[in-house]
Length: 94
Image 1 (cartoon, rainbow, N blue to C red):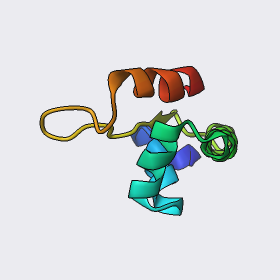
Image 2 (cartoon, rainbow, N blue to C red):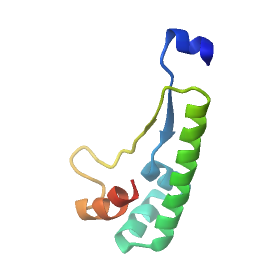
Image 3 (cartoon, one colour):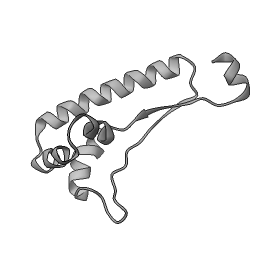
């Protein structure tokens, strides 16, 4: 890592909560859970966030210059859920 830092910038990726949710649970089920405000989805998202934060901490401790996180919430024309649902679940989670 020290050798790499002399010539470049190291950026690690920790993924995103929504993408990890639907990699663990069927995409359609995640959308249904969001619509129904199922508290189990929130608990799963909290565990994913804890994992992402731990990963980011390890990456920084190893010498990474930064950690990028992100999700894709949209289709080509709109959000995959209502803006109110996005705000309620993801804006307050992040």
